[in-house]
Image (tube, rainbow, N blue to C red):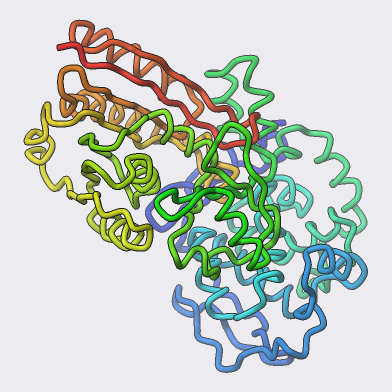
Length: 485
């Protein structure tokens, strides 16, 4: 069902001006933003958390040792407790604080998590439990907005607590207190939940813009992929083969209480099936693994970087695939990791040191000359191009609520330009791999078709491959081109 039919049509605006859209509509006027005055994490204390557009500091910490739920050691214990008792006052305030940070302060969900879980120290198991609940709220934000009768961005600013209330009703958990909501129709909750569950776009958490784009580009295939994108993402890690085998990694993690299982068809991948603080493990600190989707690891294998080659990762970012290529090359040869953002390359240096990958040379693209100097120098060029990210939106559950079509033409133009210019860094006889984390043909095979039409005497297609969200991995596209002249 289109959101317009439910009156839920205006977008949010983030700090950078990007709209968090629930369909189409008018931009959100941030000047009308209200300040919140909610309870702090100390029962009975009342003090504003947001002053002048900034979070205020907490004067006191909540004593986590006095909370029953802080002692639970499994997700099931938390679920069972909340089913009968509801969110504790502490948990409710923390959840609402994170929701406000995103919906009122317009921060990303990742940034809100980083801030609040650094501010409020809780056990990793409880943290993981709360993250799953909040992620689900955002993955079905249009559903809970409909149930809560929130129709405009300004409604979210005044009634963030309704979302948590609606979520508890949806889960059939004990309903929390809803302060200052005397006019809210609680009697119609079950009816509205049932109505929302009967609408695929609500039930699968698909915004109208994505429905229109997906059905236009993927036709009959879209329905299966839409359903998959509405499911919870799996948690994968990549074995750093410079430090050991997958079996050795699984054993080391098991010794630290992390449960994993191997992933068929991806020799370096493990799926993490327990609620564990991965980045606190000795195995992570020793550089034995990186968190990376199994589908993304397939791209690294597709590149087929052999020891001794000269490889350019032209859009390296913070280097997830760069590190995988370094491991594939067994530390022999050279990888030139290029990006337009120096801070990402600085992050890559730290990750490379931890991983023991010493054949990586970061290089910032601060002018067109940097790329031109590299023409015809590489055996392999990986172009992991900027894209709409439609293949990975279930991992970025807050990002899908802005209309991704607004920048799509600019993204396609950028992809075309990068592919045209960066491909020239490959030697004659060398390989260019173009990849995206999008599932839309206009960013993938159509870009390759256009490139080959313009370079038919210079390049030829060796093979291409899709990884669809319905496979259980994130969505990706990859194409391998060979330079002929």
